[in-house]
Length: 551
Image (tube, rainbow, N blue to C red; front, side, top):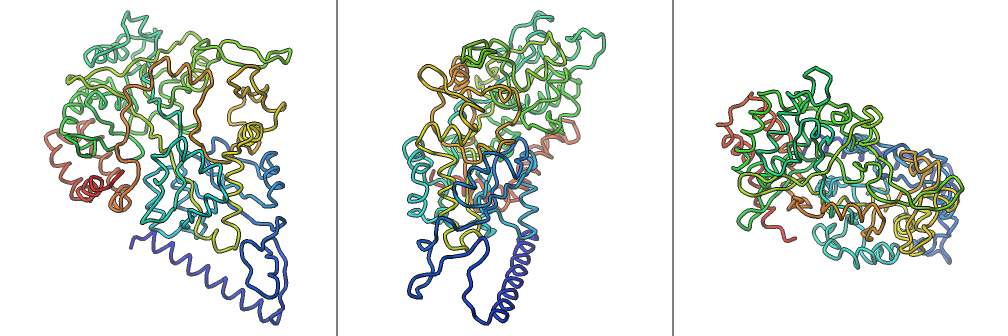
């Protein structure tokens, strides 16, 4: 048993002791009186029968702790949050946990004995880990279908291959969160103005890419007369690994398929060839020496601060919508007269930050370059984005599970288009309006259209993503860029027992070894030794189970 599991069980036993002691005191004080009071009061059953979920009234007040994806904290008195609370007669306690540190913050809460009722599992491979820790409740499938019918219908109709992704040992523990926009891989981004200044095309091959990144480093692309720029950093490295058919740097262990079998990409012998390039580039000063700490320096996780600050000219970070430039496509907006009109799209996220610092900067999205064996690709984010689960303590209170599922269904998959839009974007005609033409899409009203994370600040969008096809102009633009091609996706989206047990340690071992190979701290001749270390540390068992798993 791990130290974390011991802490969790100790905390649970302590809480149970306090609960038992408290109930004993109450029974003594009240002398066995059958009193009903408090927010969790249960309606007395008729004729002395035992209370059940069906005996709960609509006025029952549940206190429900709720975890969700957040860019900004959700105020407890947020407008849309209050609306949901009033509609269902509950009190929602949103756990504000920074997305970049979500797992560590959640694990800290769990170690202290606190389990969220609505349990967001950001990394799909973590579902099994949390189930094994005993912090998740089984969700009876008949209960799920009865109390979250719209949610389950959409998953069944739009993503049937993932319906049973959350089943462990024949029991349902996680509702799959399927992101339809993940058909688009991560973009490969270059500073177009740097390429133009240096007279270089967008690279299509590894040789051309190498020429570009050396020029970005040594040929003063920003024109300041100082050698203070680099070719690439950590996220760009995945495009090089992709040119050899694998992805290495990711939040999860990335599996590939070779000769019909699953294998861990970082262990592919061809990675030695990729590492030889990175080792040379690092020695020559072409790679940002701070690549170990990553391109993002805090805040919104998809911002590449190294790129935004003009430190390097290439990256593959974030999603396509983080790299929109002024005029990339025509989009709907509200003009000064209050009319819904089409106008050129405005720069967003990384590009917006970049041009705020360098007004003349321009970017271009290129295709992943080909490697020496004809392979190419950038990281694809799995369609199975995460899981939504129920905390183990939630089912201890009769009717609470059913209430959570009702709320989740309402805020995630309401069949009424107006209500569904309100749950995600706020009040109609205040926060958003419909487009005047079909297919109807949402237009965010000023000033919310320029406010980062406004949905969090008003308490909207507290539900889970459902796999409904996106029809907006932004997605149509992404399709024209062919971002649905050349993506390298994880061949293992869910965990096995060995991966749950060894995964975190194996990721640390892999990252440490790769950094040492790149920086020259460890000779490349030890790559096979690293593979043996990895396999001996649980990797062999992980690979064996991955190939035995039926997906």
